[in-house]
Amino acid sequence: QKEVEQNSGPLSVPEGAIASLNCTYSDRGSQSFFWYRQYSGKSPELIMFIYSNGDKEDGRFTAQLNKASQYVSLLIRDSQPSDSATYLCAVISNAGNMLTFGGGTRLMVKP
Amino acid sequence: EPEVTQTPSHQVTQMGQEVILRCVPISNHLYFYWYRQILGQKVEFLVSFYNNEISEKSEIFDDQFSVERPDGSNFTLKIRSTKLEDSAMYFCASSPGGADQPQHFGDGTRLSIL
Image (cartoon, rainbow over all chains, first blue to last red; front, side):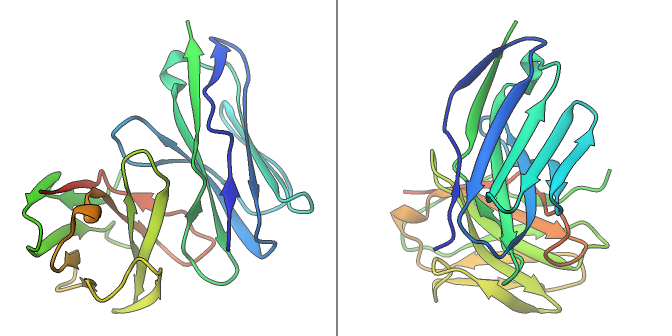
């Protein structure tokens, strides 16, 4: 059973702070890792993807991957109230191309 | 920016009826997917489709479900004999390639079974 685990939150941070969102996965064969943002009642929106160990930066977002620890994280710098949403971690194993999603972490950025 | 489009945005159907959910994937994408999200739960994979055939399906995707690409642009999910527990958001997604390519989601169809 392939599992992707996230703390459901809510994670509350003040505006301008760094938000750190974490995700662990059970399948060592996972090869591709994605972060999606989902506003209430809306569809998942792709934020970042990462395939190799280390950091990947895109604007205010940094994805971090540690395959040995089976751990993915997303850092959001200079958090804004508009970043308030549920952040979904999703992985694809080497056995196919289906996304396995975590339950999401709800982020609240307070002005 | 190209988008995945889904119709209808909301579908209300009586239990036992058949429903067809429609999707237009991004035009140069080769892989198509259906996911669902029951209210308050995780997004769950249903099926993937490539080269006019199902490439992967989950345990959820039983004989009640079918997918089709009837022409060069549409991708449909048919649910036969709907049940109350089929009520969910259904998302279509597409990607340009396989497992190393990001999947882009449509806005979803909210399916309500009465």
